[in-house]
Image (cartoon, rainbow, N blue to C red; front, side, top):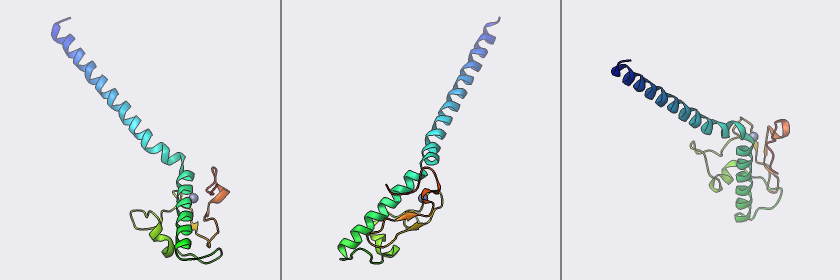
Length: 121
Ligand SMILES: [Zn+2]
């Protein structure tokens, strides 16, 4: 076998190796980026509910509100980390939030209809 041919085969092998390596890296990046989102909408939702609950408590405390009084989204907005659109973060899979009154636990419309449930523990 002439030398040039061996060299070109080595070259080809090297580039195939690079290609496979790149593919492995791409798959790894895709997996790490998409898996947490796909597996944990409930966790994201519960985190939002927790934030809403905390914001309600803070608002109630600062405004001397007691259990059973009405709370609106506008009331709690200043006490919550809003999304990019300046809104209260929404359920990652499309549930609607019911803020409830002071003292109530905020709920997601999906609630226990999905597994894992979108319910504050
Ligand atoms: Zn939800």
